[in-house]
Amino acid sequence: RSRVRNMVFPEKLLYKQPSVLVGRTDVVAVTPWLAPIVWEGTFDPVLVDNIYKPMNLTIATTVFAIGKYVRFLQDFLETAEEHFMVGFHVRYYVFTDRPHDVPSVNLSQGRHLSVIQVPGSNRWQEISARRMEIIQTTIERQIRREADYIFCLDVDSKFHARWGSESLGRLVAVIHPGYYEQTRDRFPYERRPASTAYIPMDEGDYYYGGAMIGGFVEDVYTLTKVCRTRFEEDAGNSIEAAWQEESHLNRYLLYNKPSKVLSPEYLWQDFKAKTKEVKVIRFSGVIKNYAEVRPN
Ligand code: UDP
Ligand code: MN
Image (spheres, rainbow, N blue to C red):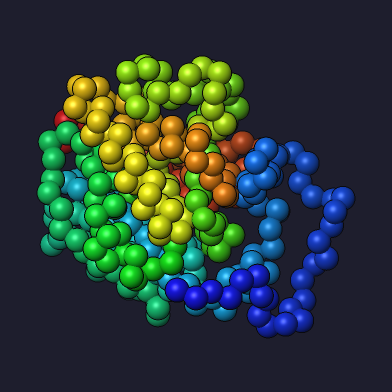
């Protein structure tokens, strides 16, 4: 797929002068490996859209709705239509064992939804873990021909504000809202050396949320393939990482640094009060009754 890079369309677009001296000082907006950390106020939405729009991109969005989780689809899709990648081509891939319960949601022009039937499971840990495998095989089968970028998202969530082209990058991860004020030894990484997701106490950058993985289709493909293989290797040794695929994701990203990091604005939790550095909540996990929605 050919791309036009860093060209602004139209030329002579007017926007606020970027400053070298004035900007947000209450948060860190770049990692020590020089990847941007995306916060409100660090980017100009009109400018970034005008850079990415001429590339005529298609964004794949995968979402799993297995068992009772189909109930979350309607709000997820309706709010995505309002806030997620507005003005871009979006292809939703909904994986479910209940295709007849997928709600029909009006999609804007240039947006498309396909339902892919997958088996259910009696263990939520397995549903969560098999996401890597199913994303991997679906990229092989179709997504790599149908999209440029991919975002893999949790369905038990809603969009509340813009999630746009500022989030695009080669490999994109999101900082988990629960741990960004903690030191690395407090992160809930997998700590048993017997697991392939093991991270020692003196390593770790951020604690990334498993509810979002994004980037170029091929980079996410490699990530899902590696995480799946490691998950299966662990299973062969009768070990399951502390937070399943989230643990494997964190291990992968420690040694394969993301090229863009999304701030917790892009993954909040409804039960958590907004903190002062979060100027806008863009996407958040809804409050759910675990005992009622999960199979076990
Ligand atoms: N999921 C599902 N059915 C289940 C359990 C999980 O479809 O019975 C999918 C769903 O997409 C969900 C994701 O796996 O958003 C992660 O699970 P969950 O949201 O329960 O984990 P949490 O965010 O609470 O850690
Ligand atoms: Mn969730």
